[in-house]
Amino acid sequence: MGVLGRFMVGLTKCMPRIFVAGVARRYVAGKDINSAVSVMKKLSAEGACFTVDVLGEEISNLDEAQFFIDEYDRVLDAIVNNGLDANLSIKPTAFGLLIDEDKAYRNIERLLRNAAEHDIFVRLDMEDHRVTQPTIDIVLAMHAKGLRNVGTVLQSRLFRTTSDIDAICEKLGGHADFRICKGVYLEDESISHSKYQPIVDALNQHVDQILDHGAYAGIASHDWPIIEHTLAALEARGMGPDCEDPRDGCAGSRAGKGPGYEFQMLLGVRGNIRRRLSKAGHRTRIYIPYGERWYEYSMRRLDENPDVAFHITKSIFMPWTNRR
Image 1 (spheres, one colour):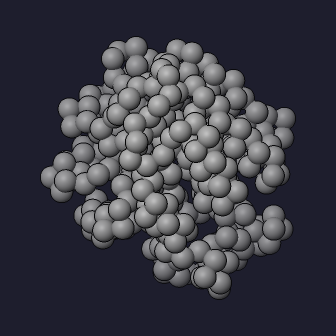
Image 2 (cartoon, rainbow, N blue to C red):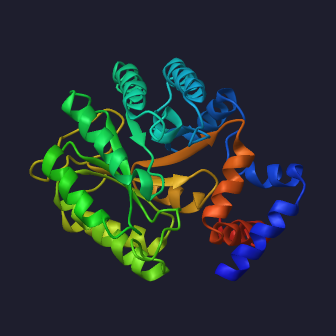
């Protein structure tokens, strides 16, 4: 699949931009916040909640960070004014993390305080290994300031994730809040798993670990073996829909959250599974990316993980494998 994925990446880059736009429309909510709001209103009827991501990440100068600061202000206003069940996903490098760490902290703290006024949670997306520890450090620093409406993403393909979960939970206890996923960034084999099954096994183990720590678990996967494992893990711990979180040390009910866990999926991917989980009473969240930089985002993701191209191509020619 890797060879085919790389071939499809090269082929996609040769295609006219308008064709790529047609493919991306399934996975990106549009170019502006109004388009994203329209998508969320439509999908709300399916019992979903959302996390909104303004496309773009590592910036070249701090002036570019102002765009993301202003745009996320607009996102917050749109969520509140439209009564949407949504939170935010941000990339710390878009706020200047790799340019001026102190300034990035101030930018992110400002957003967190604005979001906290409306009980809106902010998720720090995890980028490549250069910023794994700095991203975790931001979460810990903000919690130390009393801002508990923030958590991070951890990637199960990284060897360090098991110890990261333990370290974060030791400091934050039941207030720790994770999105756990396989991870899209292809890292060196000296620091990460590279094969499918070891990554799945690691993710399943991390789900168990997070649940046993009493932390909040956002299980971000479309893989049925992971979902099936999670459902069994929840049942074994007396957790599930429409019941209080029974774990010792958990933070209890939180605004916009499920009873200690939720399932998360990308826009346009495996909607049939998401609807099945929602119908069973599980909280399901859809990742809603939007922005003018949709093309750069799409090409970057293909470069980072060519196998994504395989799955996109498969969904085009065999749509029954990936129902909306």
